[in-house]
Amino acid sequence: MAQENEKHQVIFSGIQPTGKLTLGNYIGALRNFKLLEDSYDCIYSIVDMHALTVRQNPTELRRACLSVMSLFLAVGLDPEKSLIYFQSHVSGHAELAWVLNCFTYMGELSRMTQFKDKSAKHADNINAGLFTYPVLMAADILLYQTDLVPIGADQKQHLELARDIAERFNGVYGDVFTVPDAYIPKIGGRVMSLQEPTRKMSKSDPEETYIAMLDEPAVIRRKLRRAVTDSENSVRFDPEGKPGISNLMSILSTLTGMSMDEISAAYDGRGYGVFKDAVADAVIAEFEPIQKRYNEIFADKAYLEQVMTQCAERARRIAGRTLTKVRRKVGMAALKL
Ligand code: ATP
Ligand code: LTN
Image (cartoon, rainbow, N blue to C red; front, side):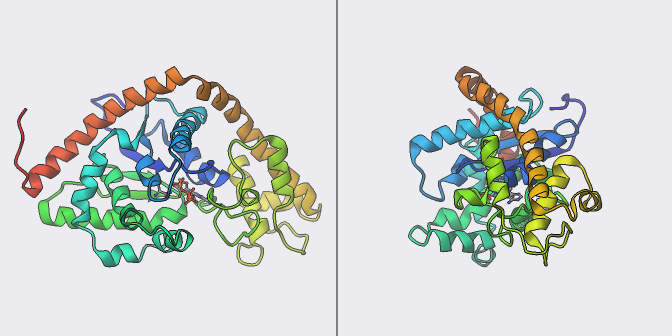
């Protein structure tokens, strides 16, 4: 975090501790968390309350929370600079979400594509939390007067709703919330499934469709070799006509900095096997050091405990300022303890 007297813009983002974090989560979000760390005041949350919108095994959820926190630290986020904490440790998220629920329309929530997708996937458990999920996400963001939200393209609709809610609230009560902007990478904002490259890579889909950040090198190589491509044998960027190859090119481009033209020049005509191996090399080179650090950090429970406690405390303090303002604006009586 910047010193108290130098005001930086605020970044907030969250990741759900559900399943294994994927290459999509990394390229769409986590990688940018680190890239932005030095230029902003960054607040990164493991959004365990959002995870409850689908049924979770408590033991696994607790483990997944610590695992995601370890991954945040393993990509190099520095808890002295950035806040890294669990959403459920700052009760202000739930409190603000309630108030914002009263400023959100049923029609808006019904239009959310993630709600429609998840309702279809979990038809036996279409709970109210799944429906109001975007309101809790808006509360996460608005609680910290966030300027910028690094997310994958799939979250753009939710971010736009958060902006609408903030503007609506400000319209009634004056400037209470900063209206946030999305930060979506131009390349890699939507990493696609390895088996169905017209769908987004998702950690709740079958194993062979995604690369997990903690997959062993041999597994990464095997999954990429089996990735669905086409019968053309040409390494050319054409997301409509060649979704599989274009997805692999995007992955290689974000990890190596090569442009699409440079990738074509290097691999066109050499066979898809050679190209896929080059993508595997880049992914393995990126993840191997992260995995090594992850194993050390995940084993150090005392360190994780210390980070989670200190960051939650600091997050609570910042959130408290917004909550006091909101309570006063909407007309709740002040409680002086
Ligand atoms: P699920 O697929 O199980 O719903 P998820 O991975 O989409 O989970 P989160 O863990 O909350 O959900 O996502 C964390 C961040 O990763 C979000 O910013 C999201 O936009 C981003 N993200 C997720 N999948 C991809 C993807 N395939 N490409 C780019 N960004 C992604
Ligand atoms: N909804 C996001 C996770 C999320 C989030 C947030 C992202 C919850 N709260 C606040 C950015 C900012 C998802 O499903 N990927």
